[in-house]
Length: 78
Image (cartoon, rainbow, N blue to C red; front, side, top):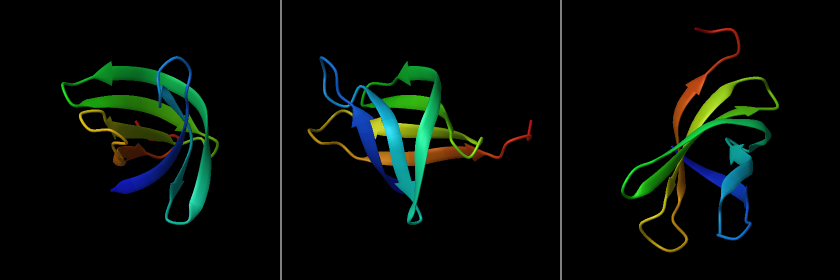
């Protein structure tokens, strides 16, 4: 599912997500729990201000690559 992401840009562009929009609601990233790389993507496991966990995928193989929500877990679920 496509999401709009505002990311922190340090030395490199789009280093990590800061906030994202999903279904017209904006979430603030409170914690980046994990980050890993694939040949054409970077994945971020994050906790948002609603307490839920999300995995976002950023396409890095093309300039201005998009972001997708690939996983969601409600607070309290195992």
